[in-house]
Length: 286
Image (cartoon, rainbow, N blue to C red):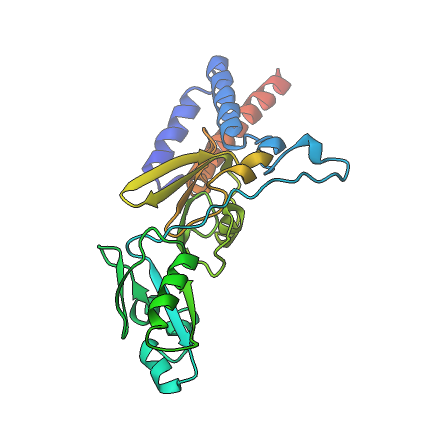
């Protein structure tokens, strides 16, 4: 009847036990248990982010910004654009005439060619100027230092410095995991997760891990996005090279495992139906 040897064995096993009511009851309970595991519901309160009863009634809550100025680190890439009266001398400072070193509007991979990368000593080698130590400076402080050094060569110059290597990685229970380049230096964790296509159905919003590299130290924090005061967290605003990992709810089965389980439950439920039909017909005759 069945070509699959496993199905033949299961069918023979069930037929051999058709007269055993205890076996029928056990099978039914197994089916109910399996269905409850795979179709368990997640409470709505665990799916809503930034919850706070005080927000109800149309009254907003004001939170101070927790963002701190980012300090440049080894490996960061900067674009430096110099504008001055002397066009020829101006172009000698710029790596590309495309604006901001040609990096910010180009493909992300080209920024390492058209930008200035901070080396292991914390320096950049600025064209026509030489070494500048920028590690542990903010972007504004780096721009001031560049402007001061370049003014020795080019009068009335305007120097713009941009951080172009703002990359984050998103993993776990999101719809589009991967790495993303950011144009907004004030990108929040919510915006970052939005780039990943939002959460999956079994994403645990109470356990979002963030890995942050600060010089030679890696910080690891677990964030509860269902809390409204997440805005006050120092991890609310993302920094370059942050890695986000969204954990699944404990006990939930990832959707990629549903197919074989569904097939197995379908076979089991079919066999239970046959058993129930058999007993119904037999009892009706008695």
